[in-house]
Length: 226
Length: 226
DNA sequence: CCCACGCGTTAAGAAACCGTCAAGATCCGC
DNA sequence: GCGGATCTTGACGGTTTCTTAACGCGTGGG
Image (cartoon, rainbow over all chains, first blue to last red):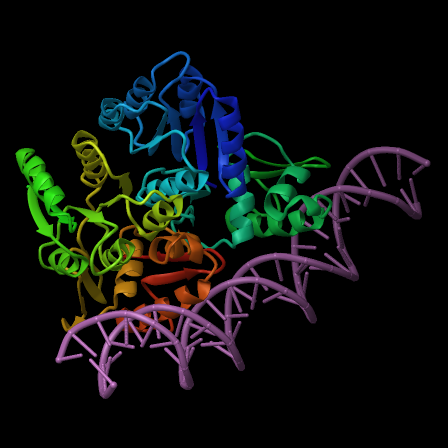
């Protein structure tokens, strides 16, 4: 899922953006000031950032420069400032686009789509490797220890991704079912057993004795790295 | 030198742009209408395009769509129109940015720099060769193993380019549909099946058993090099 | 000891998806 | 306008994937 980080101190705008973006299937992370925004960008790297120029602590341009020091994530700058120079400064600091308040939500969403469209190339490796298999979550590619390709179905990818993104952490039946099948299926633990068995058959050295995809009886599953 | 193609019918604006861009070291090509602009884009492929929405012959959106059929050159749209929908349409047609008239020359230049900054670093090899075919993405030329030329349609080029630029990497249905047909078509997986079949018939040694353009059922397609 | 329960395993039918084809519709140059 | 190329659209059968149900196994409690 595409993650969007919004850095803005206008609570009303934050709320509107969260609703509009979530409705389009984006994952939304909010930050009320520059410091929090920079921390969030490091902690949970977003696929796109929206930054207000008028922040309470740092200047928006400073935030853009700080991000550009280590990331090439698309940045969309918002501002109520009308001067041309502020636009030039923001764009030359490394912003990808500049939108003047007030703006229409439809336009902002279209600009987000335009920015996302440009960032397909091999950016995030997102590779998890163990002694028995190696999985590239971004490329949706899995290979076993011998190096031959392993084919996984959509459901298997979805399950595996949740587990691999949370190494050593228990993921409950409910969490898995809600994420993969939706909120109505939180009791169908049958599905989990079947698909986990398929995953193990494809990835575990000894499927009947899982080494990496472990069961926590009565609770859920977890991925245990080497 | 960076070549900029400006498509606009406002003589005064053309003149101002030519002077301002030339002063910054850009090579400038001017076109007074959409037809001339499209011809110029084919004849002398620019590194960036500036297109006015209100052209005498074609709609600017149509020009953007036509360009996007075979090229991913950055496109900056100019317009005096104020409606939000016209911005959304232009951006979704494949434009990279939208600037409302009247605008400051400094802002336009900053937006040009921002657009150029995004494209320059990630230049992928323009020629992809396998045992069965060889494709020159820049020259839009494909030849089979025997060396005879293969004719591909604009849609086929667009699809093939996305796959070839991301070897071994899965490209989802959504990504392909959004890139080639626009965000409104993200459910028309029918299109993909038809055009992928055509591509395979033209490029694969055994089209019914794809070796290079592979299907990941339920997910998307990927290009697997030798 | 027996039973209830959760888990892993398997297999078969249902559903979704894919490749293929061909008939319109549309767009293009001439 | 005309004719060719390209794209859209709908239908069909084959394949993959998902769902569903049944069974075996081990554990722990009665």
